[in-house]
Image (tube, rainbow, N blue to C red; front, top):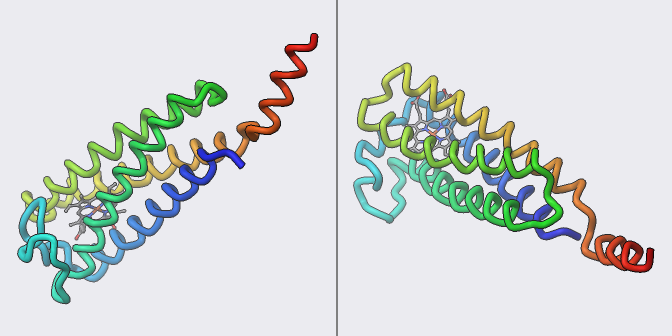
Amino acid sequence: MNFLKYLSFGTLSCLFTLIFFGGYVSASGVGLSCPDWPLCPAGLVPMGEFLIEYMHRTLAATTGLLVILTMFFTLKSKSSRRGMKLAAVIAGGLVLSQIALGGAVIVERLHSLLVTIHFAIGMTLFSMLILVTVYAFQLPSPAARKEITSTLGKT
Ligand code: HEM
């Protein structure tokens, strides 16, 4: 099985969980339970009174790293198509903007326009990662690639 299939699907799953937590942060009104940026009041220590927001930020950092790794390996892969590379680069740009915007949402005390843009970027990022994952599942396996190369070599 191709490594990019695992990586992109894992990244998509992490992003889904992050969006789930984001929705919960918003709906339960705990968006400012961590009033500081980038860390919560107890630094890296999670605490009951801001656990949901802490999880949202921790998942955002993990997702950010995974999206950048997915972009890196997609660009490095010889068999990935142009559409996959483009979607991975857009996802990389969006995830960085989204994390910075998350900071602005806190600094601006949940300004409604910023929260709406934060939601819209989250959805666009999710769409881009679905594209990357679908492309990744269409990539030939290493064994199939080897067979194609050897067949081409014989002709
Ligand atoms: C890839 C990164 C991120 C994604 C995909 C993401 C996604 C989301 C989503 C989908 C929501 C729900 C919005 C709504 O229901 O209107 C949300 C809420 C929120 N996010 Fe993020 N987020 C990310 C990073 C961050 C970061 C780094 C922060 C920084 C503190 C942050 C702060 C917030 C806050 C405070 C809310 C709640 C807003 C409210 O109370 O209405 N997010 N996020």
